Amino acid sequence: MTDCIFCKIASGILPASIIYQDEKIIAFDDIYPKAPTHKLIIPRKHIATLNDLSAEDKGLIDEMTAVAQKLAVDLKIDQSGYRVLINCNPDGGQVVYHLHLHLLGGKRLTFKEW
Ligand code: 5GP
Ligand code: ZN
Image (cartoon, rainbow, N blue to C red; front, side, top):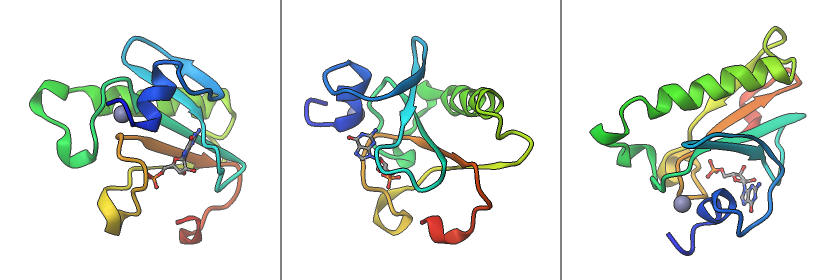
């Protein structure tokens, strides 16, 4: 996906503050944080929305949530609490069409973050 921002971050063409990466997943700071901790966790594979996850992606969401769990511990928000969310399509508030988990924490969250 040549014009996808997150594919460009995953391939190193665009800069980002990367805090985790492995062969399938990469995590980095959200450029416009909506909480003191706001990380994005994405698959390297271009998947536009949650609707586009297919059988061949089985286990991918599990791996992404495992990264969120690990980062929450590393960032010391696991006990205070955090939120993991996926926005899908316009009514869900999706702006970047490359599947991503938001990891938010570091304050008492309300629904005003979105
Ligand atoms: P969505 O609304 O699609 O669920 O969330 C997209 C997120 O990507 C937003 O929170 C936005 O701040 C973030 N974002 C958009 N462009 C960039 C970028 O170029 N770099 C980074 N690190 N985050 C971005
Ligand atoms: Zn992409």
